[in-house]
Amino acid sequence: MTTLSVPALATGAARRYVVADLGGTTLRIGRVTEGSDRVEAVRRMATEGLDRHRGASAQDLQDRVVEQLTRELDAYLATPEGSGASAVGVSFAGPMTKDGTVLAGPTLWGGPAAPLPITAVLGRRLAVPVVVANDITAAAWRYASAEPEPFCLITISSGIGHKVFRNGEVLVSDSGHGGEIGHWRVDPREDAVPCECGGRGHLGGIASGRGVLTAAHRAAAADPEGFARSALTGPAHGSPDGITNQDLARAVRAGDAFATRVLRGCLLPLAMAVNCVFTAIGVRRYLFIGGFAVALGPRFVTLLGDELTKLGCFGLDEQQIRAMLALGAADDDHCLLGMARMLAGTLPAAAGSGGGA
Ligand SMILES: [Zn+2]
Image (cartoon, rainbow, N blue to C red; front, side, top):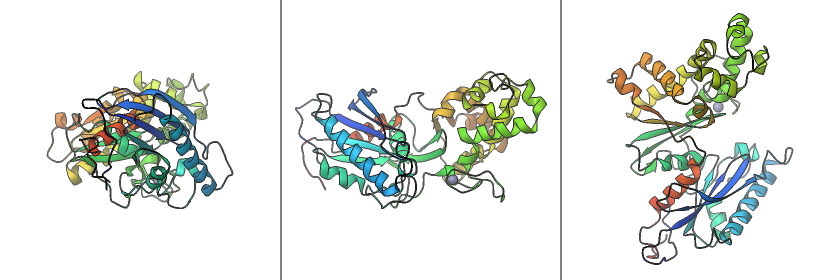
């Protein structure tokens, strides 16, 4: 992490940060006051990337996204809400090196484009110090002071990602590798289910919202009688392909046997991933965020705990195993609040003391 100098503040004034969450679909910008748990004055707009401009080249899309991000941050800093900010923090949906270079933006510009030194680019264009971090790294920072370290944050939405947080930092290599447990190959068979990255048998292709939905479609087609008796039949109008993630989550929460069986099958490889991280480096706290985990609620933790207990964790009893698993906050502010915590935790404590590097 580069040390930055920040503008001087009146004694006792809480610093304010402008934070942005740059995702494939939406760009959000807001303000967080140091010590606060709220994101204020949020602006939300469609990201000028792959979602909006299908057919454009990856490089063209990257240029559009950077231009939009810079323009919108510049404009926000000029508003009454944004003026006086000590720093800007941006969470980015893709792998980054430690020195702030984006290696890929699959949901933003698709295929390969030039490595993007995004922190330097924004730093040249904006009037305040800028820090850019991977989105799950940012999300992990949200829990940095509240959770016992080390802890592992796992996001379960259309894909799966993770980060391990320890001693004030997220454990990934300087070159940006790590934190991608969703692409761990848990099923080595040649015909294993495809992952959105192009690989096969990856955890994220099996235990994500998208993966569980695919499993439900297959199970319903393979077992018409079981499907007909399940709570999924009605909303899907009797068609296996009519099952949605929302209906699946609702059925699991209601205790539907068919939906629960499908989910259990998908949670086993996720439990294996937790088992492996615990066994390899001893992490004893796993926080789950992301749309699909939130939709399933406490039932997700119970069912995952069942699978993990069946596997066993070397040296732990069942109570200790189940105590390792918890849901994170059910809102969508992980990256924005996390970026503010990261800025507060990494910028110099004595504002205006200089010493930037
Ligand atoms: Zn993959």
